[in-house]
Image (cartoon, rainbow, N blue to C red; front, side, top):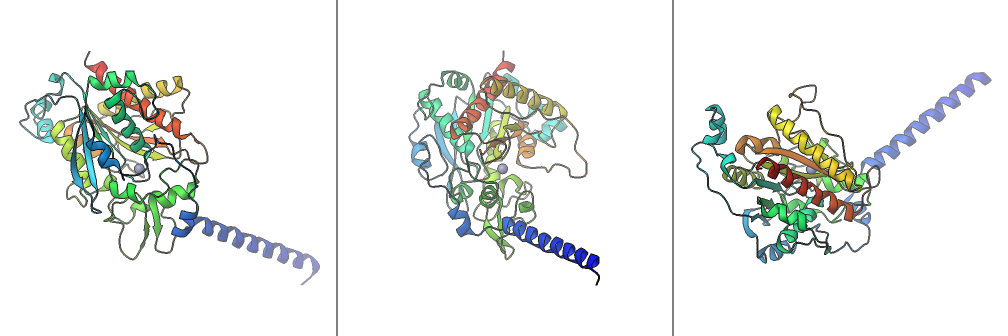
Length: 382
Ligand SMILES: [Zn+2]
């Protein structure tokens, strides 16, 4: 071995050692044990307006004076799922289910929605238990409808006035088991791997499942599954991807039953992510429905901008297809069972990174969305 070739070998050796070191670091970052996840929860007292748990929710919801509360499902873990309604229900004749009425070219055969004086708006709270931003938002919204103020004590007169002119259907907790499993109670200020641990969970070797890998096994049970992320109920079902034609869990069917019976005009499935507030393109609905939701997105983003809050850009209306087509999910199902114009909303968690909003800003992002939704529907009744 001459001097030059020895130098080359040493350089290669350094490269190999460096690569091994880097990959072991990468592997370390891809794993998280339950003990490590627990140790990562900051010690803090969350503000009183924040709701990151279903404990205590039943008592609060049973004390309503203006709204009506009822239990619509019991989760596999024995927890209640509630429906809160505001505003009278207007009875309209229904002669056929939605898809038959569409087949008849008579949507009115399902429900004459235009004949109703009040828009019917359906708020489907988090079906992913760690996405408690909407749980906080909806409990505050209920408080606004009860008292005119949010839980910070801030007057929300306009939101209540708009709400009083609609029929509101509110499910604060779309997956009570998942919410109960979410020990941090807020991801705000925490890291990306904390989100992955509590959100999608781990495989049995403590590797983080991540998104969208966590959808590869469903139900999330058996020897491959580790810590079940808050995506799942206690039976390992992710209600966003239940089997709608042969349901596996009680949550999604209960949500869809409300939609079928009430025929909402507009419906939202609440979620959260790392980035700016975003109204997603609803998949497997007509382009007309997509256009309407896109208009709502523009109105909402304009309102957020006015309030110095971050926002995404409106989605592009398009047909289905491509290499990775969109799934037919809970949002799609809401349209096909009730004709509701449905959408998925993604709220920022406020984790470290590109959209680190505060807990207060998260509440404002939520309340602003409700206002935009109510206004959007009321404008159609003019
Ligand atoms: Zn989600």
